[in-house]
Length: 327
Image (tube, rainbow, N blue to C red; front, top):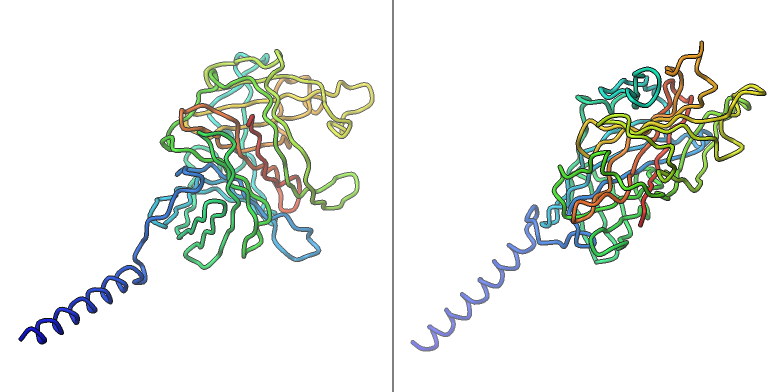
């Protein structure tokens, strides 16, 4: 009797172990996975920039990544590609209080209020220094994880399976709807990089490249126009800027940084010599740069990730992605 009881007990134990192992590895069963750098929500700029001769399509994407801690991840994003034209869109804030007239401020078509976002779902693995995301369609991204501060983490794109070759994101555990109003933005120098594809008017060629980039808000020329807009008129900082100005014309740039609330910000600039008829306003091919605020655990703003989608016509203008931070 004891032998029979012992055999039954061993069989029950073996079956329990089998069922436990099966449950732990069953397809679709989500497992606990640490957040990258201990942070759940990331503002991300990602793109693929390729010479047209390669036949690869260049694109830029601005996104929020939500890591769920159970091995799943969701992305909400805006998307632009080089082979499509995106006419500029007007936003609600104007330059009232900054220049002589209340000029329209613009953003890239598809980023204005009410424009739909796209989404992706997937899974991720995290070994502490590297995060691998597999989206439901099978596309993968590998990111290196950094720690700029105790309250802010970073991810930098190492590789992808679908043509993305540059990406940068910053994450924290602040709620996704946390943001800093423009009158509270720290007037710092925000440093970073830009990768781009550009149609060069003078040569008629399409060029790709990368360079250091900066958003410098330290100048006293920056003024609070109204509750939703900052603006400055600044001299050019590079010999390559505003080369379309005629001899004798002042080479200066008008900048706008606007908000309609939330993490979305609208960054726009143009050469003042291109305004027609003495108007304070400009409706031409300005540089329009959708941006998302980089926010740490305490709700402090440390800069932006963004894209430039100034390609109002297919394969004309500039398409780029960038980041500007003070950490």
